[in-house]
Image 1: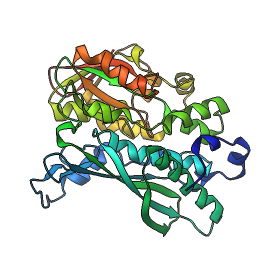
Image 2: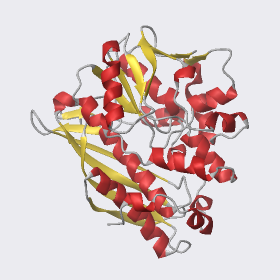
Image 3: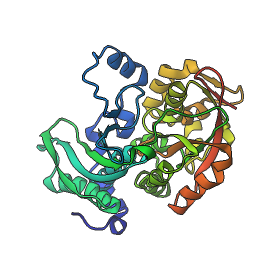
Length: 360
């Protein structure tokens, strides 16, 4: 197990020694296959065995699979891995582990243990660098109170790290990315802009203060999901990752057969990201995301390209997105605040109609 995470938050000189991002063509959740391409792939997949105990499978692009063991216990299983979003190996491992565990919390579940998925160009990276990646992931798992109980390694052309995350949930407390109701308020747990920060880092124009903001956000475990899972007034829950806010909200809308209305001015943003976006700094995944689902989005005329870039920005280890009864907003925000999510904000609402998102 690596040293305590808080003792190794950031080391700027170390970041300059070895640029992990130079080994990969993409980073973080920006590596994800574009939503339209992914849909085309899985649409032609032949359905396999679907036992009655499988409460959640691939049908709604939910965050994890859920398998009922008995009336009060279900296993939650998910996996997530990607290429470096940052250059520091410890930070990379910590971000990837936090991101993988997020899908467990997004189901209202508690993590139980993890398995490491490791692919490294062993002929080009020092063993110590690879070890530090694993230590970063182990430190986050220690914060979550779970062990890394095993894993698998391969020699790959690009650095890859992530986790298989296993959790448990009472089926009565299970939350899905469907079930939102017209009139529900939408609450977002973390600010947007991680993909823009990552793009700025690759361009060499991300300062230390903004790097610290990115690291603090991407390594903050989405633990409020456990308490939100127990709230009957929370009707749907997911986390915002590679498809951006609009993409994951559209998944919620499609599964709930409803629309959504977002107020751009209410969105929590990381410091400086709007200015970076207006200078043309953006993740390539942002354009791929818009090409995949832009036809189902209506943007107010006053919103410029920078606003669109933020709405489609791939969020590595992004925030939880909850749809809750309007009279429960204060309680939901209280849950986030109690877990240290000071920027959690009500950003809009679910509306009746076809599955599309309007941003005003």
